[in-house]
Length: 91
Image (cartoon, rainbow, N blue to C red; front, side, top):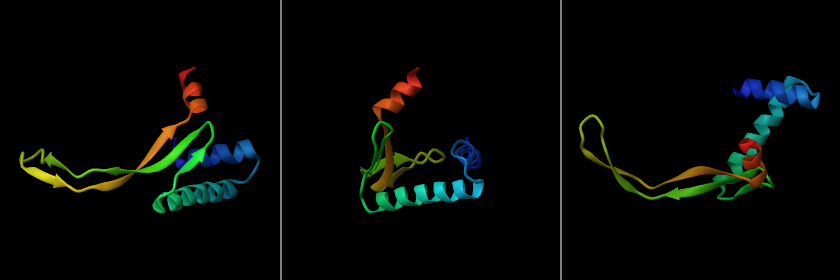
């Protein structure tokens, strides 16, 4: 599903215009991003939790040359599905 398809579904199911649905979706994404940048978690009961995880520095290999390279530590976004979402998918 693309962002445009999601906007269309949101507009249809909520009875608002596509422009309003687009603004709502953009605001939703922007606010989650802002919270994660600030090191906070975002939880939706039954749906899931967005958080930031620290990935340790590690050694890797360049697939073309086989040379060992250093991969620096970094922060990555993580989504953990909630119980209701997991059950809905399994059915």
